[in-house]
Image (cartoon, rainbow over all chains, first blue to last red; front, side, top):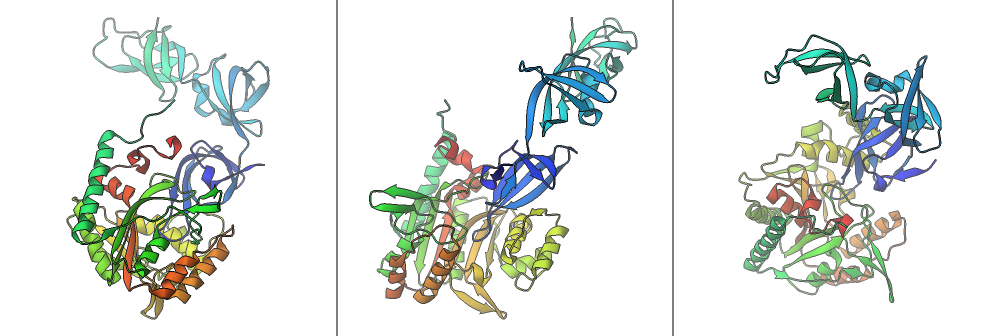
Length: 189
Length: 312
C-alpha cells in the first residue's frame, strides 16, 4: 500500500490510522524556532464519522487508505442491503449495508445518483444527492391563502422522512429538499 | 488561469510602509543596511531546517535559510552594527503561518547583551505594531513549563512528558525523543497560552537547543542565552547572545551536519571569521511577514504575499 509524507497532507487525503480509514479535514504545520516540526491534523474516521485531532512529526509517512468516491445509482433494497450500480457504463453493482446508509435512507426512493465511498471496494458511506424531490403522503390540510404567516407544520414524505413545510402545503404535492440540512427549499409544480 | 495576486493592493501598501518604518528605525540608530549572497556554497547544518539546493555550473549551491553566517563574517571584519531585510528559503515549511520563501529581518548589535537586545526589539515591535501598549512579559523556558504544565522541562523524563501530553489530550503518532516531546508540549500547549495584547519573551532554552548562541549555568542547569519573541501564539523572532568561541561553534556545526540526511558542506569561512574574532554581540532574526500579519490582524500568511507559493 502506498503512503503519504506529511509534506503531502491536504484536506480530503485518505489515511489508514490504527486499522481504520480516515480523511484529513484540516492540516496545520507547526514548528518551534529551533526544534521538531509537527503536522497537527484534524482527521475524520470514515467508519464512525468521528473527528479527532492527531499529531505527526513532520516528514513521517502514513499509510494511504484505499478509499475512493464513486457516483452510483440507487437501485433497490433487499434485506438489510441497498444495491447501487456504477454510472460510468461499467454496470458494476455493490451492496451497501444499512450501517453505511445512515441518513441517506431518508431521501432515497430509487434511481437517485449518490456518492458511494468505497474502502477496499466495500461501501463505507453513502452520500445522497444534495437536492431531492419527494411527494408529501401525509400532512394537515393546507390553509388556503396562508403564504405570508411563515408558520410551519410537519409533513411525512413518501420515503418516510418528516420535514417541516409551510402551512399552505397539501398532501400529494412535491417538495424540493436540501439533504445536507434536511430542510424544505421549495414546492415543485 | 489564475494570474492574480494573492495579496490585496492594500496589503502591498502596508508592507511597503512597514519596510520604510523598519529602515527609518535602524537609520536613526546608526545600524548599517547590508546585503549578503542568497546562494551560498555552504548549507545550513541545523538538523530541523532544510535548505533548497540549486545546480550551478560551479557546482551545487544552497539558498540561504537566514543570512546569519555571512553577516557574522561582516561583524568579524569590523562592520559594526548591521541589519538586512531579505528573502530566505526553507524547504517543507508551508501552512497558515509559513511559506517556503519568506522575508526576514536579521540584525546584530555589537556590545549588546541579549537583555539589551530584548529591550530594543520591544521598542521596534511596539513602533510597528501600535496595538501593543502593555509592556512585554519575559519568562524562562523553565518558568513557562512550570506555569502552564506544572513540570520542569530540564528534569522531566520521557514518560512524564508523554503522560503530560496524554493529560492534555494530545494524540501523537510515532515515537518522540525527549526534546521532541518538549517541542510538542511547547508548540501545542504553551504557545497557545500567550496573550494576544502583549509580547511574550521566552529565554534560556535547553543548552541542546543553543544553536549558535552562548550557553550559561542557570540554577544548576546549562541553558542557552537565546530568546524567542511571541505575539499571542505566533513566534516573531529568535535572538542570541552570539557564541564567539570558534571551537564551540565548529563542534555544533559538525554535530548538526551528522544529523542531516544528505552531506552538507560546512561554512568554513564562517568558522575562520569567528576564529579571527567575532565581537561580543547580540543578534536576532525576525519574520517580517508575520509582523505584517499581526499589524493587519490577518489570519493567513499567504494572503499577505504578492504571490503565494502555489501561484509563484
